[in-house]
Amino acid sequence: MNECSQNNVFASKYLDNPIFGIVSDVAVSLGVRAFVIGGYVRDCFLGKKSKDIDIVVEGSGTAFAREVGRRVHSRVSVFENYGTAMLRYHHTEIEFVGARRESYNRDSRNPIVEDGTLEDDQLRRDFTINAMAFSLQKDDYGTLVDPFGGIKDLDKGIIRTPADPDKTFDDDPLRMLRAVRFATKLSTWEKYFNITPECFASIRRNASRLQILSKERIVEELNKILVTDHPSMGFDLMDKAGMLQYILPDLLKLKGVQMLEGRAHKENFTHTLQVVDNLAEMEVEAISQGLLHDYEPSENGFTESLRTEPNVWLRWAALLHDIGKPASKKFDPVTGWSFHGHEVIGGRMVPKIFTGLKMPLNEKMKYVQKLVSLHLRPQALVTEEVTDSAVRRLLFEAGNDIEDLMLLCKADITSKNEHKVEVLKSNFDLVMGKIRQVEEKDAIRNWKNPITGDYIMELYGLPPCRLLGELKDAIKEAIMDSECDNTFEAADTLLRRLAAERGLVPAEKR
Ligand code: ATP
Ligand code: MG
Image (tube, rainbow, N blue to C red; front, side):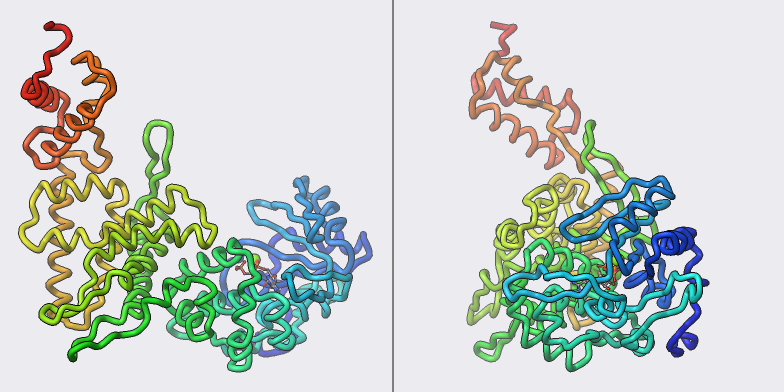
């Protein structure tokens, strides 16, 4: 990073993608100046590969994009409302925007936009580390243009706004969440990225402005924070900045320790954040070992693939796993504090929380709900003896999400009592072993009852009625309890016996 300490860095080594040469040629032929700006430049100096490239043009961004699109034979998507355009070049998204000056109306995060110079455009950017640009002009190709000292801030791990923070955050409150996201995402154990005290104080003052943001934009940032390596940092920052009450107020209810008759319960907010971090670490590790899979619904059931990226919904499940605790909290003078049934209450809260954040109530929500509802089950299994039938039931209920559920349960072990941790971990290994054994014998994960309602109706000439459900349930229970083999023949024999006990005679024998 030493070379970064100079103000003007010759950085053409970062511009090896042929698109930059093409943009440079187009700039000459259209008689405008063009620069690569923002995340791409920042990530070059961080030694990271950027997924997308932002080009700023002193002139019309959309006209410029059309000309580049013509030369590289790529379709250009134009967003007239925003004055931006995008095209894809060898799997990289290239975004074009005209350099602009922005002013804001207090009731909206949509700015009033005027044409501006590169410097105007850099001043409207969120953070100094995101406001750096490389020139693409022929005479100074690759020169770093960094009027606000972004390179020094990157070196020192500082997040601050180019303009007055109060104005920056008031104009567009999303920037407060972006500050938290970049601090969380860029921080490593070796080097922290800190929001400057001045910016942080400004975020605290402006936190209530988060209310004007659309939920969709908030969730986009939350998701990006959740998939970092240590999401707790982001939630901790949001908490300290007074932002959480406008984002996820239910999470705040987990805070605090109550003491009665000298007995205190666990601090559930810190515990939750610890679980999210544990899970992030374990998931990254498991992904690198090729131990996790993703399952997508398909025509004949589902398709399985090796997981390569963190599953944001698993992170949501960790974040919400104890969300039902405040509502289930009880104190008993003999047994102390309890949170009985918090997983059931938590499971019921998931759709409400998703609705509040305008997140879709689809299979992802059901997955989060399932994990929250089941998160105590694996540990509960070992309180007595791990029976086959209990494991079969768990496998049946968790289905393909069993790997993720087990990861969540392991991440949930945060006790400071080393002996307790040892016991819990060995219990956990016991359940894992048993799951493997049961799975080897039988495919319970995606279990389907070998006896269908149609089959029973046809066999006994019955109309749709409650009895069908009762018979199917009895067969399911018997298979789960290993009292009946998981085959059609065994299930059919059992069905005929149960039906006979209820006085039913097969239609063909009447
Ligand atoms: P990444 O793509 O890795 O998340 P990025 O910095 O590229 O990071 P984008 O959201 O792609 O972030 O935005 C591109 C650039 O646009 C940023 O680097 C920043 O300069 C600017 N920018 C984005 N959102 C805002 C905003 N709300 N206010 C001011 N500038 C912004
Ligand atoms: Mg980007």
